Image 1 (cartoon, one colour):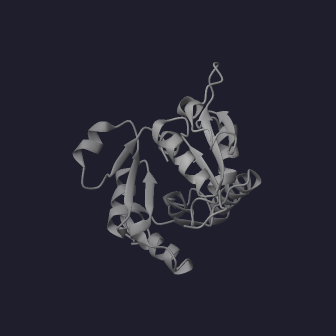
Image 2 (cartoon, rainbow, N blue to C red; image 1 turned 120 degrees about the horizontal axis):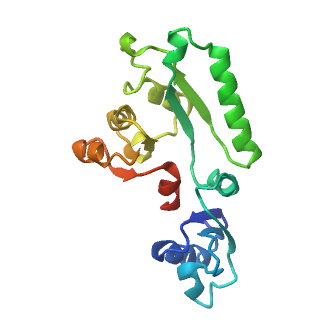
Image 3 (cartoon, rainbow, N blue to C red; image 1 turned 90 degrees about the horizontal axis):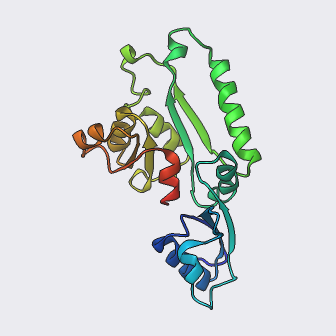
Length: 211
């Protein structure tokens, strides 16, 4: 195992997160932990961590759903994920409602904000095709996944996660051989499509808090 890496643990105040913190500190990693802020100034299970570990990790408290907290966490997440790729359908371009330039400008601003916060997005791909075009480049077609792998040959779909809020996102992920995370409160759809959906969370923040 590599040591002396900088690692962020979200949900470190929980049972699993606290034990993961202890393990990583003991093998020599530089660990920062994100715990849920509370008025009792408690770190949850970390309050009872072993004496040999206490004081050897950095703690910051907040709410993963808070934009400021997320930006702080993103500084470390860039070191957790090997590649972070955004894929989206933008049929408004195909319908003439917006231009490629406008979409690219939105993506540029998004990437800049995340980089300013210390995070990273390695690539953004979008499909301008209309649903009626039935293009492989439009989700649930896997054209954008193939483009990502061509740009980053180290990507392994069976070691990747597709997180999204639509059934087409889930089908896209499964067709490419990824694990899927459905971000929605629509539990009925999740129960209806168990083969397409591996995990279900109400939103991205909840999923991130469980990492």
